[in-house]
Length: 205
Image (cartoon, rainbow, N blue to C red):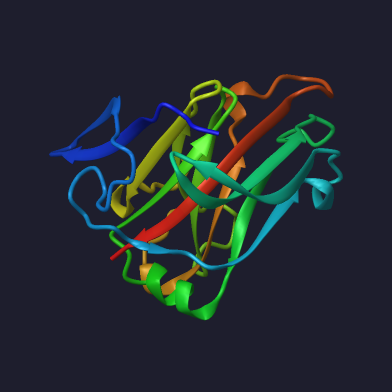
């Protein structure tokens, strides 16, 4: 399978954020803004949902080897459904990282990954042990229906949601990275399906 690549580069420019969509060449050894090739994060990929909050949202993950632009990569397919049985229904996926990857998180400058999505918005979350109310540092991004998108997120772009108890962002307290469905597309009821493919999650130090 071969895709025509689109990239989403997240670039810091003073206090402003710019999102740039452009075409990427096959292969590329460095990130879009010169932060380097990065290190592939390793560990076990898992899913989560709102069942512990008495919700009924679901998420499953399957792993496969696929050839993308001439390169065989490990692709993770995540699909599920978000309901509002729990008022703030959610589901998502994350990496149960190994110790080597956790150490990389603690000095990270940025994270990057490929995602082939459904046109919906998602959040990537940087989890730290000094957050006690689940208001983890996060960054929202959008997907393009049926198009692979490269997402590169500098650590400075991760912000706590307004409803949380503010804490200082301390990378040395990192506990993990996860992705979650975003409430912007959640509708009342029992039918809010989602499906993505993701690969190439890297840490840039």
